[in-house]
Length: 93
Image 1: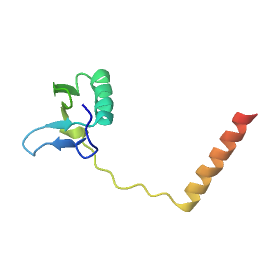
Image 2: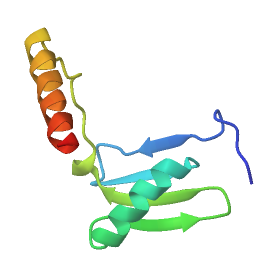
Image 3: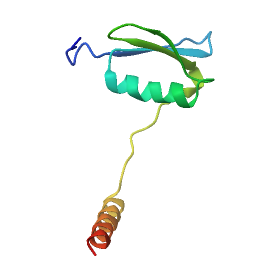
Image 4: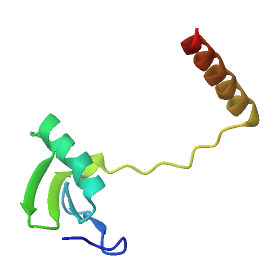
């Protein structure tokens, strides 16, 4: 079944009283990532429900992560650019 981009939702649900997070998704990219986690870490991440368009996963709330946006200075960006140039030149040799 083909879903619109709007219908490809992901919902993360947890509360202060429990240590488990439930993640419901209809987004195939998210499913692939979580299926890999289920395969690699079956004792931590579990597939709890699925149907033809969605899957629900369960994992510890401590694995939910909030990060501030990464800031890259002009100097860091230039250094990365120079490294990529050098890497591409070495591949061409």
